[in-house]
Length: 498
Image 1 (tube, rainbow, N blue to C red):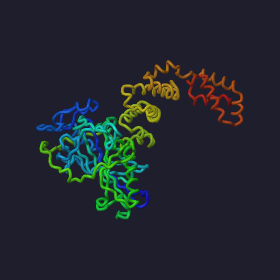
Image 2: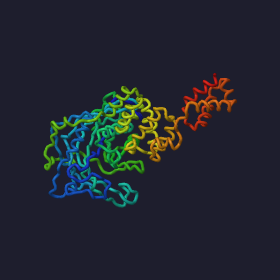
Image 3: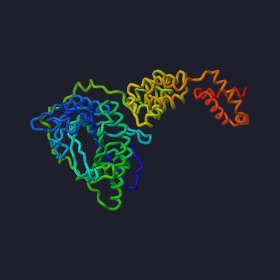
Image 4: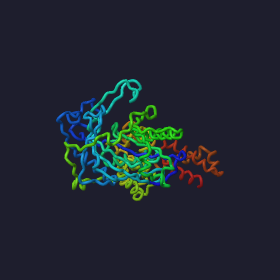
C-alpha cells in the first residue's frame, strides 16, 4: 500500500480484518442438513451439527471447491494437504463447545487483493483463508434488544454447521474508508465466483482489530510499514457484529475516535473485544480479548487430512471484476466510470455483453448502466429481480436502435411501465401510441409551430438561439412526444433559414 497523510496529528490507525463468508452450498459443511435459514428455528439440525455424542463429521465437497475458487481468485498458495483442528471455547451458540476449523495449515495462504481507494490502486495482503463451521445464531429479545440490554436471549441452531470461509488480512488498513473499499471489492469477487449470496442474512460478517500507534513509534517514514514490535506493543480492540460495508466504516470510525480521544487524554486503551451496536452507533465492551493460547487448538481426530492435489487444477474460475472492467474499457471503448457500473455484478456484466453483442456498445452502455440500473436503483431492485424478463429489455433497446420510438419515450414511459406493471414493450408502445410520427407529419408540425409562434421566431432570428428549444417543445406537443427531438431541431432550423 502507498503512504498516506495521517489524520489527527501523530496518531496512526492500524486495522486488520477477519471476514467470515458463508459459502453458498445446499448442505452444511459436515452433515447433510439444509443451509436454508428461512425455515423455522432449530428445524435444520441433526446429531452432527448439534454435537451429540457419537456423531461423526463428513466433509462437504462443494465447500472445499468453493474454498479453492476463493484461493485462486486472491492468488493464494493452496497446499497439497491441509488439516482441520478443534478451536475450544464455550458460547451458547456453539453446541459442541468447540468449533471445527483450520489452524496452522489453512487451505489458502499468502494471497492478496487489489482495491481502489480514491482513484489509487492498492494491494491488501491476505495472510490466510480457511474453512470452518458457523456457530448458531443468538436472538436477543425484549429490553433494549441489544446484547447488553435484552431481557433474554434465544438460540437457533439452523445456522450451526453452515460452511464458512474466514479471510484474514494483514494489518494493512489505515482508515475505515479503506476497509469499506476492500469489503466492496471482496464481495464483488465472491459473487463473480458464485460461492456467496449477498442477499442472505448474515452471509458476510466482519471482525476488525483496530490499534492506534503513535507515529514516533513507527521506525519507517512510511506509515504503512509498521514493525511487528510496534504492533505487538499496541493494545488493540476487536470489534465484532459488523455485517455490512457501511456498518464496518461506521463502527471503525467510532472506535478510531474513541481510542484517539482516550490516548489524547492520557487514558489507557484496554485490549478487549467490543460489540458494535448498530442501532445506537457505538461499540460496547463485551469481554477481555482472548489470546491464541486460550482456544487450546488441537487436531480434529474425526477428519483425515484434506488433500486437493490434482483436483484443484480442474477447478476453474470466471473472469474477475477488475479484469472485466479493464477489458470493457479496451474492447468496448467505455469510460472507467461506465465500466465500473457495468461490472458491479456478474449478472449486470453478462447482460451488458448480451446487449453489446447485438447493438452499438455505447447505446448498450447507456441503456444498461444509466437507464436500466438507474430505474432499478430507484425502485430498490436488482437486475436479478428481472429474471426471465431481460429479453423484454433487449427488445426495448431494439426499438430505439431501429428508430421505431424515441429514446425519451422508451425510457420515461416504456421502461418505467415495464418495471412497474410488468407489461411487454410492444404492448406499451401500441397502447400509448408511441410509435414514431412519420416524416411528413413532423414536417407539418414544424410549419404549424413556426406559424403559431411569431414571437419565438423573431427571437431566434434576432440571435436568441435558445428560442429554438421553445419551438421544439411545441412540435413535440403536436406529435404527442413521438418525434425525435434532435430531428425536430434540425427541421426547425432548416425551415427558419430557408
